[in-house]
Image (cartoon, rainbow, N blue to C red; front, top):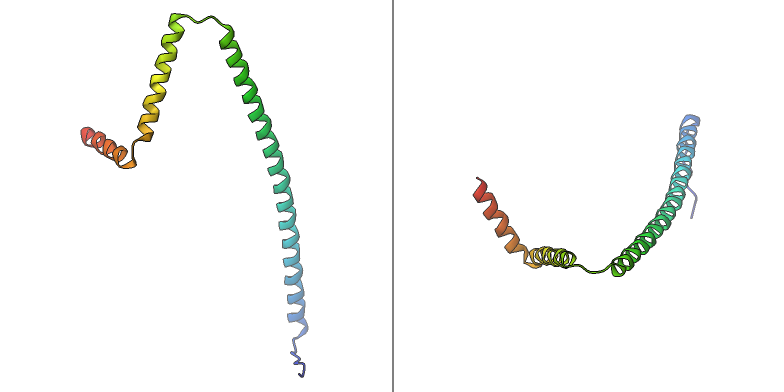
Length: 112
């Protein structure tokens, strides 16, 4: 196999070298950005984990405080209302999408 030589003039070679160096600079910048992203992402995950642990601790403290307080009839009523509200919300989202769409259509029809 015979090698093939292509002749390019000085300006073409210079432009090619400049574009190659510019491309190399872009790759290095991109590499730095990716490295910084990974560092920030790791920090974010650490902070999220600390926040999750803080919320868990806070929840445990609230439960312990509620358990330490005496129960009153008013508290039982509030608890019952809260459970009923949660069950309504669960019921709403447990219905099928078609049923929810039908409800929305009915509301739109009643408005206009």
